[in-house]
Image (tube, rainbow, N blue to C red; front, top):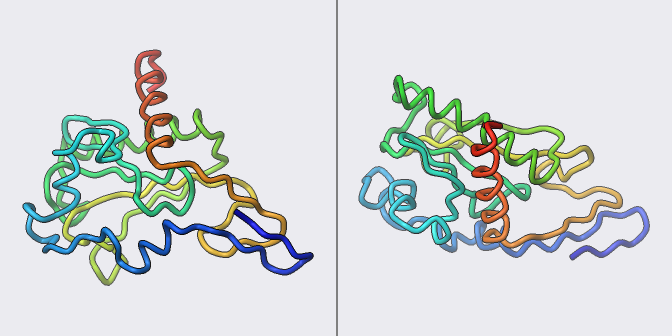
Length: 181
């Protein structure tokens, strides 16, 4: 929902971000402990409940609960390791493959113009859950919100995470079946 008043900043209503700011649904346990780590718990849920897009043998793709842009997902190894240097062989290969698959899938569903892809390594590097490696794949469009401020005549079209998950999961499967992934 947006209000426009001439050339001043628009107001963007994104209540799901306030839940993140206030700490709602953030892990309360010790993420260093694989029994309490959210990235270790998610794969035990159904795809719909865990917001999982796709599961590989070493890695899974999951929507971010508090996305910067629609379609913002994360790639996560099943193994509980903190840094990129901790994954080897088949994990590295599938992690890289899933990065490409995520980009192709998001682009096919939403027409993204570009992506921010990155990993925050360690707490001082900005990782919210430093104990379990995860890579962000954030779709970007020309003139989008650049993560925070909304300037000019920008409008945001909200979509429920469950709906985004369903679209991306379906396209992931379609691309895989057609040899596009």
